[in-house]
Every structure is written in structure tokens, then in C-alpha cells.
Image (spheres, rainbow, N blue to C red):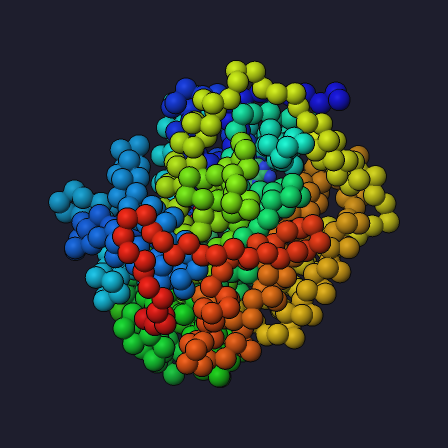
Length: 590
Ligand SMILES: Cc1cc2nc3c(=O)[nH]c(=O)nc-3n(C[C@H](O)[C@H](O)[C@H](O)COP(=O)(O)OP(=O)(O)OC[C@H]3O[C@@H](n4cnc5c(N)ncnc54)[C@H](O)[C@@H]3O)c2cc1C
């Protein structure tokens, strides 16, 4: 074959919070662990996480994991699996304290305990009133977390492969996973990373939308690789639009700003969330706040010359609080909106932020298809669907998801690796050859489509046809358009490779992944004819049987999209927790 092969016990694709938490567990267990990343580990997108990580530590007021579980199930609009949610909420205090012991510089209360702030949808006593549950390091929590995890990994001898892009998953004839084909981004050298167990922790794919809080590297590579390898994608219709992206720029203003007392106002200066969520107000869950904002704008109460945004007001807060608790936000606001939030409110609009769906796993991090774990294959973090976020994620539950499922998937891998023979099996060549052919197609293509043109067609289609509010005819047309974009992607060219920098090739390979995510999203959204969580359809009627358009009789189930034939299957939601009673279905209000 002529392609070099490197051997490891475990290979992890992704060095964000999920990948590094898993790598630490594996390396500390003495296993030879490779971590591949398109960027330097501490530049992974987790670095952008601002507001905090949730855990019912109860440092500032009474709290309980069961209340956290209730809020997460309710936030998910009952689409989350209750076994996985119970597992995550029970583990939360443990993994956060563990992180503290790894050296994470959390903010502190006067008594030395970890500082906690309120966040949207997190309430005390089964939904009564907002509770302080988000553990924060100012508004740079993800940054602090990544640095703590990276340093621990260096100490544990994790093998980092920086600026290496995984191209495809390798499966043998029985479907067992053997590792990945990868490319060194600087030189284009292709190498096989063969391992006993493989974990995808490749993060999100927010770049399928034109306006996104996500970094340019968030192109859904793990999801695309899994889809090409025959793994279905779960609940891809559910995308979170964060209420407060800076208008015109998309950069995120954390919910922690509202946690510290920030208020959303329309053009009349009205605190409009009092009408939409009388109890939680500005701290209702994200889908609720985003829809309220879009409704205000659509009904003519938006701000600015084009009446196309609302305002986030913190001018009433003590400037000392803004400087100490929200310094990064002040900087973002000055740089991207030209506004000092101490003096004037920040213009904001809902922006694509987070994918709730992904590669289907159980709460052990094993990838599961048709009820059976795929041997040797694991996924954690934003690219995975455990499913703890269901139809809508609560803020700060993602960093928690990385810690809990990064660790649990690594524990499952350790057990699996122990059961494997010492020597790795013969490498399955068919997938390797297919992957190499994908790169060669790009290098040979002439007279094709520019990568930029295909990508912007994809992003425009997703933004226009699959946004905060969804319409039947727009979705149907969106499916047709995205399949046309797929034809463009199949013919992308990168120009004369002796003249272009290698990033052109990387961007084309990333586009192969974006298109899989976009197809899965549009086709799954078109099929789900109810409104639930972040998926809101204009034609889903609010009736006694279907409150807010949610149709539990027909749609309380997970979507599975298979790339082969764009086929959809459905599987039941697990409503049975591990030790407590089911959180019974209710209409969601805040
Ligand atoms: C602006 C912003 C603020 C946020 N704030 C919060 C918050 O306060 N609290 C919270 O809970 N959540 C927050 N979130 C969400 C949370 O940050 C993310 O969901 C989470 O960090 C994702 O972590 P991850 O480990 O899954 O992936 P990432 O951190 O995105 O890491 C992905 C890794 O995969 C690598 N990779 C990808 N593709 C390949 C490939 N083909 N080959 C090799 N490597 C690859 C990348 O290089 C990277 O190392 C925020 C999100 C955004 C956008």
C-alpha cells in the first residue's frame, strides 16, 4: 500500500475538552494514546466557552443533582434519554471537583469554594426559581479548562499530533473500527493511525450556517467521517440558536451576562421577556429566548435603523462587576459592536451555536447502532449524541458533557482494550484506499466548482431554509437545494496544487463533511412535523393534544439519518432513569 502505519492502543480525534479529558484517563492508565488535532490543543473550540460548567455543588445556595436532572429533561423538551441525563447530573459534582484538583483556576467565593452563577433554565426545587449552578472562571471558563487538561496530558505522556486532519474512519469487513486515515496538514502526507479503540471528539459543525458563534474549524469532520462509514446520525434537526450573538458579527455574548443581571430590551425599552417567560424572564431556556427575540423583531419592535436586533442592557450593573466577572464580554462588545457595555446596551440577535444531535452513543460513550455497540468505536462531546440535550441544551451542560462522557468513554475504552489480543489485526485496506481516492479526486479535478462557492451556497441554504423558525414549503425546497449543493461539492476543485497553499485542500476536505451534516439536518427537519425544543415549525399547531406544537403521540422519538439513500429511521426515547422515577411529560413553560 505504501502508506505508513502507526500503532497505538487508543487513537482520539480531537483535542478539545472531550478529547483531552478522555486522553488523560487513557494515558494515566498506561495506554499508548494518540490525540490528533487540526489546531494546537489549547486552540480547540472549547477555548471559546465563556459562562461556566454546571454542577449542583450548592456552594452559594441549596442545590441537588435531581433538580439539575429535572431541568435538563425539561430543557430537552423530553427528548433527552433519562438514563444518560441522570448519569451526567450525578457525576457533575465529582468531575468538576476532579477538574479543580487538576489545576483549573475557578473563581472563588469568600470562603474559598468554587464561585457559581445562575444560567438559563437551571432552577432550584424542580423548576421553582433560578439557582446558582454554573461554576465559572470569569467569562473564560473553557480557556481555563483546556489549559488545565492540556498540562495534565503532557505530564501523562499523551502523544499529540498537532495540525493533523483525520480524513476517514477505517472499518473491517465485520464493521469493527480499526482507526483512522489522517493527513499532516503542512505536508499533505497521509498516514494510517491503527488502534485497538478509536474515539471521535471532533466538536460541532456550526459552520453549516452562514451566521454562527462557531470557529472556522467546526466543520463536523467526525460526523461526516461516521456517516461515510455507515454510522447513522441522531437528532440532527435540533440546532441551538444562541439568543445573544453580536448583531452583524455573530460573536457570542455569554448567557452569564444575563446571569449577572443583564436584561433584554426592545425598541420601546421594554423588558419583553416578562411577557414570554414570566417566571424565569431573561433566564428562560435558549430556544424560548431566541424565539421571543425573533418575534419582537418580526413584529416591528427591533432596534437600529433596520429594526433587526434587540438590546442586551447591563448599564445598570456596577462597572466593577463588569470588569471583574465579564472582562472578555466588554472587550468583545467594544471590538465587534463598537459599544462599551458599561455605558450603552449591546446589539444582539440569535445565532447558530450548538448541535444537539450527532453520532449515537450510550452513556458509556460507546457508539451504538441498532442497539449494538460498534466494536472499537466511541464518541464524546459535541459530535456525539448521548442523548443528554435532546431537543434543546441548557447552557453550561456542554462543558459538563465533555467532562462526564470524555471520562466515561475512556473508561469503556480501557476495558475494551484489556480484552483485545496484544497484536493488532491485519489492516482493512478497502477504507484506506477509498480515503486516499477522495484526496486524489481533488488533486485531479479540473473545470469544477470553487470550494468557496459551494460552501457559501451550502451556508446560505441552511440559513434561509432551516433557521430559528421553520416552514413546510421552505424545508421541502431546502431539501432539493441541499441535494443540488451536494452535486457541487462532488465537483470541487482546488486549482493548481503547485501554486495553492495546502489550506485549499483542507477546506475542500472539510466541505465533504459539512455537506453530510447539512443533508442530515435538512432531511431530518423536513420529516419531523411537530415543534419540539429548538425545532419550531410554523405548521405545527398549538392544540390541547399538541401543546406548543409538540406531538408526543407521534414524535416522542429520536431520528436516525443514514447517508445511504438519505434514509430515516426512528428509535424510542429512553424515559427510564437509572435510580429515580421518570420525569413525567409536561408542557414546557418558564
Ligand atoms: C462561543 C461559545 C461559548 C460557549 N460557552 C459555553 C459555556 O460557557 N458552557 C458550556 O457548557 N458550553 C459552552 N459552549 C459550548 C461548548 O464550548 C462546546 O460544545 C464544547 O467546547 C465542544 O467541545 P468538544 O471537545 O466536543 O470539541 P472542540 O473543543 O470543538 O474540539 C474539537 C477538536 O477536534 C479537532 N478536530 C476536528 N476535526 C478534526 C479532524 N478531522 N482531524 C483532527 N482533529 C479534528 C479540533 O482540532 C479540536 O481539537 C460554548 C460554545 C461557543 C461557540
